Length: 139
Image 1 (cartoon, rainbow, N blue to C red):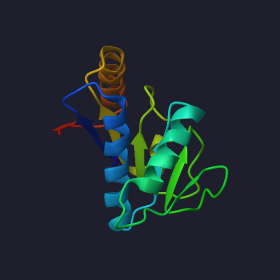
Image 2: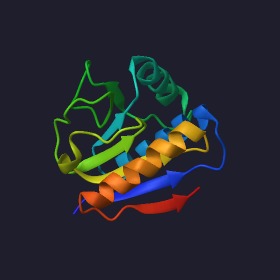
Image 3: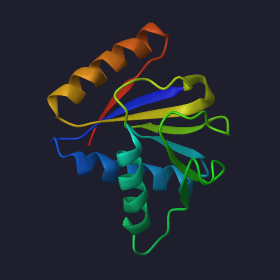
C-alpha cells in the first residue's frame, strides 16, 4: 500500500515549503526513486524549478518541468499523470492528486498558514476514508 506522510513545518513561510520539497526530492532521487513534485500552479512550478537549480551548490538535482521532459529523475508539474509507476509524489497542492495509485510514497508538506492547515487536515481525512494510513512527521 502507498505510504503517506505529512511533513509539518513549524512556521508559515511559503519558501520553507519549497526548500523542504527540494530537500525531499534530492533525498528521494539519491535513494533511486523517480520523483514528481506537484505544484499549485505554473508560477509555483517555475519558482520551484529555479530553486532546484540553485538549491545545492555542491550537488546538482537532475530535474525538468513536465512539459520539457516527463522522464527526468525529478519532474516538476501540476497534476499530470506520472510516466513512471511506484515513485515518490511530493504534493504542494492543497488537494489530493488524481493519480494516487501510481505512487508508492506520497509526502504532503504542511506549514502553519491557516488555509493550508485546513486543506491538509481535510486531505488527511480523505486519505483515511480511502483506506490509507497517513502519518505525521514534525520537522
